[in-house]
Image 1: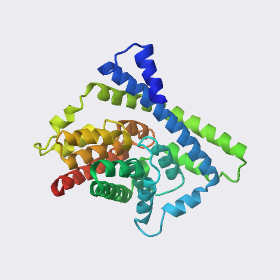
Image 2 (image 1 turned 180 degrees about the vertical axis):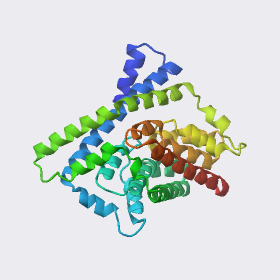
Image 3 (image 1 turned 90 degrees about the vertical axis):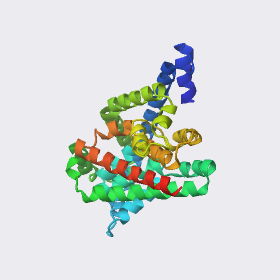
Image 4 (image 1 turned 120 degrees about the vertical axis):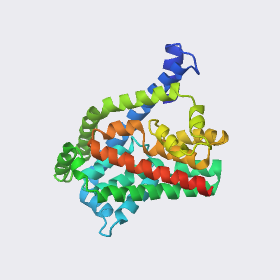
Length: 315
C-alpha cells in the first residue's frame, strides 16, 4: 500500500517518468521515509507498552547472564525471532540499555536482528540452497556474538548519550499501571523519541535515495568483481551507505551473483547493507557518542570483511 501511494505521488501527481533516475530516487525517498517512520512509530509504541508490563529487572536478568558471553549468545538468538531492519531495531536496543542490559549484549542483538532472521534464511535457501543459507545464518550469528563481546570488553558505557542513562533511572520508578496509563506512557515516549531522531532519519534516507537512484546496479559488479583482490572491502564500503532489510536486498544479491560476482563478496555486501546502514548510523548518533559509534561500525565491518574472504576461499 505504501509503495502504491509513493508511486502515485511521484509518477501520477508529479508526472515523473518511471525508471528515470530522479523519479526512482524520489520514489525511494518517499516510500522508505513512510515505511521507516511507520515501523519506528509502531515498534517504539509496542516496546514502550511491553516495558510497562515486563519489569526491566527481568530483562536484565535474562540477558545479563552470570556466565560470561551467555548473554551475547541469547541476545543474538533473540535477533533471529525479531526480524527488524537495522533502523527498527534501534528502539529495542535503547530499551535494553535503559533496562541495564550490558552494552556488549545489546550490540549482539542490534547486529543480529536485521542481519540474521527467518526471512533471510528462507529466501537464501530458496535462491542459493540450504548450504549457503545455513552458512550465512551461522556466520551472521558469529559476527553478532563476537562483535558484542569485543564491544563489551572495551567498557565504552561512557560513550552512550547521557539522556539514555537518565531515562534508565526513570524506568525503575514504573510500577503497576492500568491499561490507560500504559497507553498514555507509550504515546508520550513514542512522540518524545521521534522528536529526537526524525531529522536524522530524513537525512539518512535522503542520502540512501540518491545512491539508489543515481548509482547504477552494475557499478558494484564493476568495482567488486572476482578479479579485484579488494572486492570484499569495496563491497562492504559500498553496502554501508545503502539501506534495506533482508527481503529487499536478497533480490539484488541474486542479480549480482548472476553477473559473476563471488558469493563471499555478495554475502558480505548483503551483511553490510542489512547490519550497517547509513540511516541506522544517523539514528544511533543521537544515542551513542562518536567514539562508540565508530567502534561499532569498525568492528562489525571488519568482521564482515573477514567472513567475505572466508566465503570466497571455501565456496
